[in-house]
Image (cartoon, rainbow, N blue to C red; front, side, top):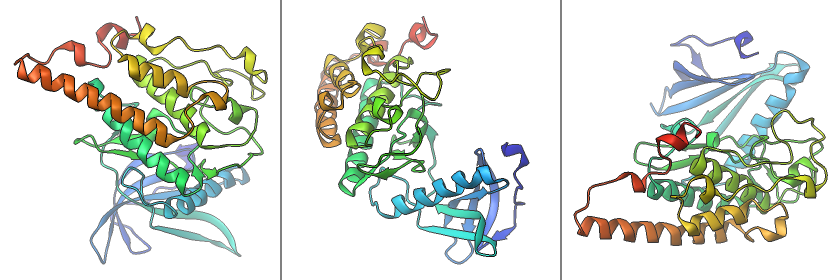
Length: 310
């Protein structure tokens, strides 16, 4: 449990970084606001601790996160320039990731208010994910909580701990139940189309505040639904939220096709389609502005009743 973690004190210096405050916790990690004593730059410092042998996976994921991040260079993906390992007798017992400070809130905690904002964020993320795929990696855990959005609506993809090389077959099921692709549950090859599915499930939730049925829904055993034909198809997003633009609804439903071959061929294709949707939304807003109409609820992603789960 994270409550057993040993926290650093404010003002303590770790490998040249002064701890300013604690800003978050995970199962085996604490994230601090920290300042580089030489450059005075502010970073997010992630401290991962191994308390038992079961915690080794958290160290492994942190190493993967750093390795993948350092292979990427895109404004929509969090940068991790440095990793610091510490331990005894060549055994790592803790490590620190010096991470880009992302000032914002996740889409899960603070979903966008309008369709235009939502699609703009989706487009940024899709471009970042395409860059990741071009470099040979898959995120493999895309979900609303892993997209952080700043006050000026700049998106940043975080948490690369489950990322892997394209074509990897993982020895165990990894992913988030409400967003996981069938091939992840069945332990088949992880490909860019896996990210397309995870991302489609993410867009579906933002548009409807509902999760799609997956091969590993909440409460399922780790075996999951091994027969793809047993996976329930999600209702079209537009049925749950009639205000969803038709072009966006069609894209989302294509992304969450159970058969990877029926999904968009690449995240580049997804980004291009999102750009078309965004252009249409902006054109419609311009027409409203010319007509001197006031902002109304028709532009909002989810109204009060949908947000309440009605």
